[in-house]
Image (tube, rainbow, N blue to C red):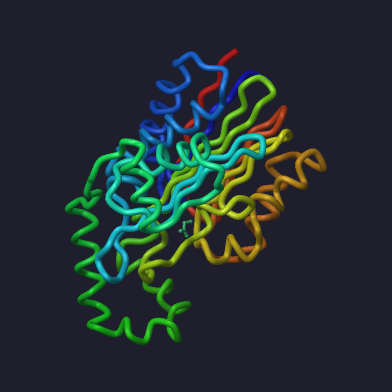
Length: 286
Ligand code: GLY
């Protein structure tokens, strides 16, 4: 199979995003590199900079109005991730620096912001008019009821459509195989409505992404449910046992009607599957 870069625009993204994703995949793969990390990070960076996706610029706000983002990159068991990071333009670039420059796997919250500044990432507000409008609608709707959130949290997802989710779209992600090496990268503003400090699946290896010597996988959807099922590692362990498309379909079907999607690449296949709309883009090259 040729080298491949496969992107998704999040569970809930429809086919109107396919052209943009194919463009991002093609422009990334035209850059010469032998490292799949370069391809997944660059394509996720492009999606973070596109305000129509829920990652980087255009990330959703939390109930308190803040934007805290999660991102990760993984390749052949090297991992870097950031969680609840604020006021940076490209969380995925910070995650890559965690992988390259620190002995750690994940840096969170204030520490992640401080680390980002120390390696040259400046202050940036990812708010857009669209996410501000959605947040105001959310605040009006709950009318101060967020004090009851712990008891009612699971119910809050049922309001998703009112706030523009999943139309708002979830996490963006990319998987790549270049030669015999694999990489995965992911970035998200999270699944709102959510509390400040809440961390979803995306920065957690095994849950929101996984990349080893047999393949790479990235998930999108309601993070809590993806974490409980350790979705990406579970899929990884099944690579080679049946067609990749069947493995993804079976895993997604375990979620019932809970919003979820996944993309994956193995040595000789690539595939995507979601129980909702999920735009994808792909580029292959020799
Ligand atoms: N899948 C993104 C999140 O739940 O945070």
